[in-house]
Amino acid sequence: MKSLKPNTDERAVLVGFAIKSAHKGTDTEDSLEELRELAGSAGAAPVAETTQIRGAADAATLLGRGKVDELLALSKSVEADLVIIDFDLSPTQQRNLEKLLDLKVIDRTQLILDIFASRARTREGRLQVELAQLNYLLPRLSGHGASMSRLGGGIGTRGPGETKLETDRRRVHRRIKKIQEEIEKVRAGRTLHRRQRQAVPLATIALVGYTNAGKSTLFNRLTSAHVLADRKMFATLDPTVRSIQLPSRRKALLSDTVGFIRNLPTTLVHAFRATLEEVAEAALILHVVDASSEGAAEQAEQVMKVLGEIGAATTPQILILNKSDRLPPDSPEEARDSDALTRSVLRHSSPPYPPAVLMSGLTGVGVPDLLASIDRVLPSDAQDVEHFRIPAGHGADIALLHESARVIALEYHDGVCDVDAAVPAAVRERLSLWLTPGQPVEKSVGKS
Image (cartoon, rainbow, N blue to C red; front, side, top):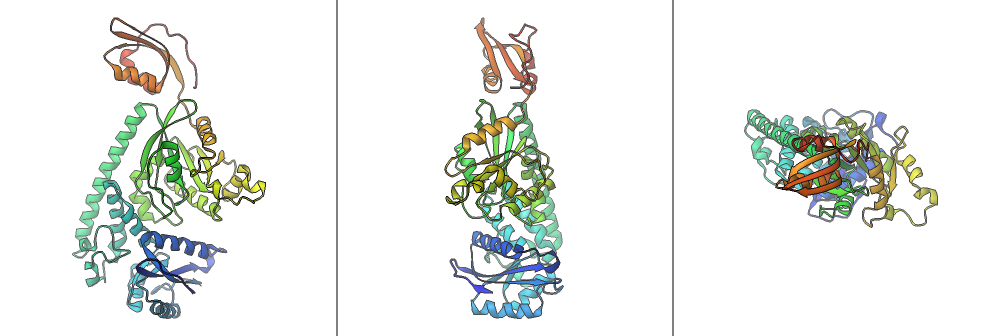
């Protein structure tokens, strides 16, 4: 147990907890360190922390009465405003702890939901967060009484607002149903957008990784975008898509997604299904790992677990060993070798390992290597050379050939543009109206 120096207004006591049979080495300490970062991202000041490893969770209070008494004394001594438990509490355990400690008590899931509520910027993101919060709060309605009417009471109360929950379960169920219907519309819209993108053969590449691995910094480096890049966890919540150009002059769409985390709440995985489908539908996944982190292997394992849950485990991947600028300059040469780092980072996975690139999204070192690797790994459509006769007034169709095909020959005459071009199947289908039986310059050119 130790005290910590506060840095914001809401003072929090952090409590690490683990079941002895599932406890491994420094798992509890690592998880508590992550909880400290989560609390800071939510705007809390961790002023003290304590841990407990038990043979089994106490059904009434999780921690057991002796530890609760110790926690009560600790909370009073540091004048804490809330207690954050690094474990999922049942509704009964949460209510009992709040009564015994006379403090607001939240668990890991509620803390993460609160951060998501503060980060969501788009209507889609807000809907997804509200759905997750309502599903979390629904079984906790019973017994809250007057406390359900509190508004904006700090961490754990942001989002839909608890006044929505103070009437009865039926009102909450109606709201959940309405949100689910709206999210289904969002999902349908995303599916439509994906189909429209697929009509023009631009492959989608998804950036995934543990939260704070440097995805947004790398995204900004590759696309010249201005996505928020912050050391706070879950700084980027709403997905962003931008185009990039590869060394072969192919274009692709790069998508930045929400960061993953160990024990990501199931409610969030389900609520963010529409967003995570962007990852599941991607042609290539860039798995970003903070190569300078001591917990890189465990973080990579958590990401692979979530990818499996959303059906993206078999999608082609490139491992990005990011933050090479933060590796110790005096570290041995093998510690900076991409093959050795890959074996270390993916030690919880079985070979063969995906191709890896050691780089820094912050400084730009290794970006050319990454783009070249994407060009090699990203699947490309077989391209046949076809002859198109397009009226000169249909400039958009002519521009599409320049944008998404390899133009071999082009000639304007009598208000018509004759074009020989090596085209992917999607472009051929889209411009089938202008296909002619004329002889192209060359026949099939295979893959480009």
